[in-house]
Image (tube, rainbow, N blue to C red; front, top):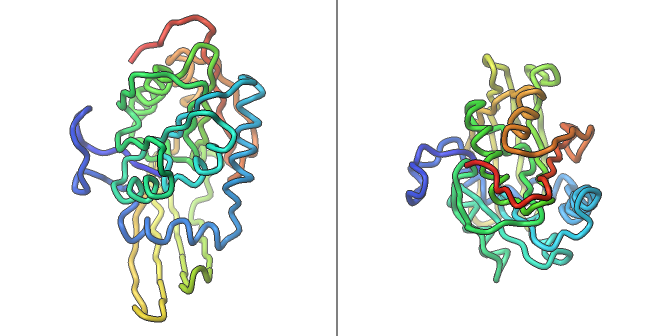
Length: 265
């Protein structure tokens, strides 16, 4: 998953530009942690596709924004004729391109990418939009999604927590053994104004390399449901909110009109 950078639109993205993005060490253990915790990317991808097909039965092309390591795309490509990804983090982008030979994975910012084509469906999953820093960033992002959505196409966005559903002081932990490595992850998340600040500590134990430790800080915006819906509507989508979702935070489903209007950028 990605986070917005401070680079100007169209400028090359370098590791130094990326703020709050998943770093090299985190990217290295990302899939191992979630697979070790039992996350089934293939099943999730099938569920997402089923939701998309309730509004667009023929999903022939799909763009996954903030695609991370490409795990969902790896499953979706078996059911969708053409898939592409967008990922800002250089390290996640590298892993995604390795995992998805023959699939175009673009290293770019979700607020301003321009691929010069449209897709039956655009997805942005696992609360990646929470990394956007302002309501205006959220609006810019949905306008960009709309510009890449075909007439009658759909956009599926998994939000971060709303202010009223966020649990201040939440502590999470997991211990997994995957591919000969033991990985411990402990997190603590607190509210800071209209954001949540999640501090994550990792310990990785490997037979040859021994122990290593590192930490991450993730600052995610607590946008309201109304702010999400307004951003969808201003971009030109008809929007509805679906409760639950794979992480319990719900899903926003936007449908583009059947006309050829590309929306505003």
